Image (cartoon, rainbow, N blue to C red):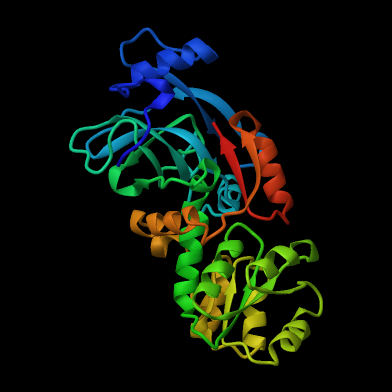
Length: 344
């Protein structure tokens, strides 16, 4: 994958020590006396809890093993699911091991590669993902198969926001199989996942009803979506907007929307939720999400769409790594349009 050299080195960088030398000169980053051992800044938490348990700490920089690359992170989005894991609300499904890092989405520059790496080289600009809760950091090790090239025209913020939201949206749309002539209702239509779901469903030729607050209606209309205010009376407003015919429902928010889809007469096999697994199990709805499309092939396809301007990745706000608590405070407040991104 072609890419520009990192930190202005004309010949690229062959090892991580060069990167740290440059960072130390600019930022005073710590380095140990042992050869090859370096410290980096990373988000950590040592127990379940609220925003206050999040810390930015100096930890040992990882070393890429066989088939892995070390990426200097330029951007990494945050997710509602990460907040739930940190609170312990997903302990039964996704327990944390302390101290725990966090972060799946990432975009950055390859600064070192391990043996037997294929498809990536030092200096490549990439986006990708890690399942090790580790991307909210200055550097992260990533398997080469979980990286794809950052196409020209795709911003760093968008690139670092595409994995979780994008693959979740891709899988959710695939699950309900929208076709021309279908009417699809999407809850949380202006959120990080929902804003991509509505665009992908419109690309399939469906009529898309987006449930969102009034300030987001203009954005939805601009993407060919019919906006409907959520809240009390939403079922009747959907019926009025659709003439009573709804073929599919994608829930990206939870909080009763699976039951609403059933009330509207949508068949269970054409209901998909990314949040309310318990109700989905009761009614037979689908729960396709990020895991169903978790691969660099899908991520690369979405990145190319976004780079061509055919898929917008809304960015609500960016924060430096040291303000991770503020970033999650905004996320957990809700009602953001698009993704919140950390910039290490």
